[in-house]
Image (cartoon, rainbow, N blue to C red; front, side):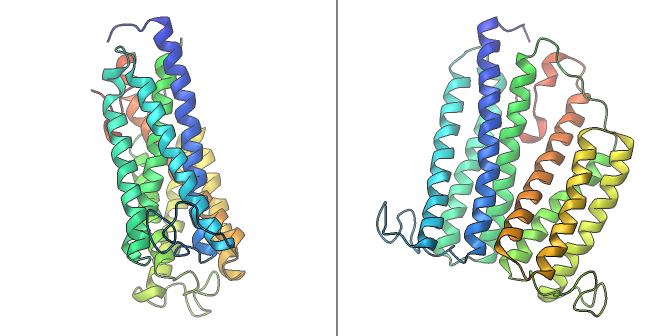
Length: 309
């Protein structure tokens, strides 16, 4: 691809910073959603998109939480529209960012739909889990686009070091852990193993079926993720070390969540750390793909997340 004019690079830089800010808001929205669920406020607005048939309902504490979550989601949606308009307004940037923006907007539409279904279907486990997974993927996609835009605008593009095959093991484990965490939450299995490190004082894995089995699988995969991250962080210092540190903290917070009987604050922290680990791992995958690119033009592609080719 040809070099960008300076004003287009400045626009890409501003858009990259804006996308990073939107990714941070998306992360905060995930934590906010955990607070809504932990306070039992997921159905405090029993209809959708209105709340008790009103745009602005009469508030109590739980309604304020759920309505505030919807308000923040709406504000984030407007930010994504503004980002898309900004990037697509320049002909030089349009071919580079059209596909990732279409991907992000599709995720946003899916997430909004899942949010509505979560309410209308009375917190069905599959909608709760899918809502969590898509929300995390949406936040990662914004962060991925931000890195692409900032790399494009940089005078000296950063050249990530090759990651090797271990990043795919780490990424697979983290993705599975996110799904398992959603299933544990949506099936109210957070205290199915009420002791730690043993499950109900019996064994590490008394069964792999039912709520107890879900909880056991979640714990077991957490240990495997920690092991995979330890190997990867040893092979490639830097962002991988941050990811490994987050995983260790997450295991400690998960144990505290059980031993303290799921306090709201610890539950929200557990969800926030999970989202941070998913983001960190996703950016490591992005760097691994970018390291394969032989030219600056290829550096701004996003093959796994709908990037331009």
